Length: 130
Image (cartoon, rainbow, N blue to C red; front, side, top):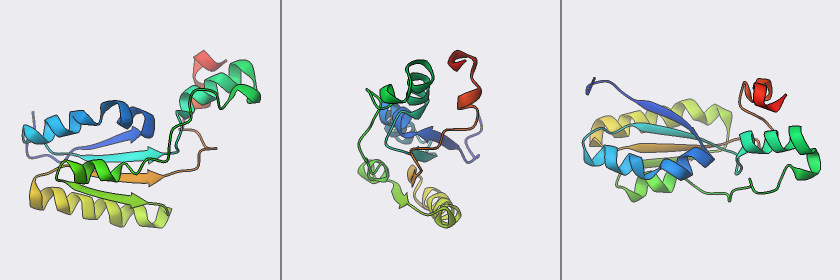
């Protein structure tokens, strides 16, 4: 609808792992975007639900993910990728990714490593967990 607008999509590592190839399709059709992945090596929303329902001892069953450097996906499709491990580096990484998209017309992935013991805002307030 707005081909001259920048697009940034925020993902968790679980959701990016399930939908990453949509990025290749978007790029092939001339609609590059910036993917920012919050990577905690887990499907934490599911994890929290399991803890809320079954207790802490069930928290790590079936929702742990590997330590995947998702920035490599951006590079794999010919775009830009960067790993970020410190909060102070997020802003500069996003700027570099935006510049790469503007220069090349290819997608970018910024993989931000986050604490697996933290939850997305709102997760604990969802009705399904009460």
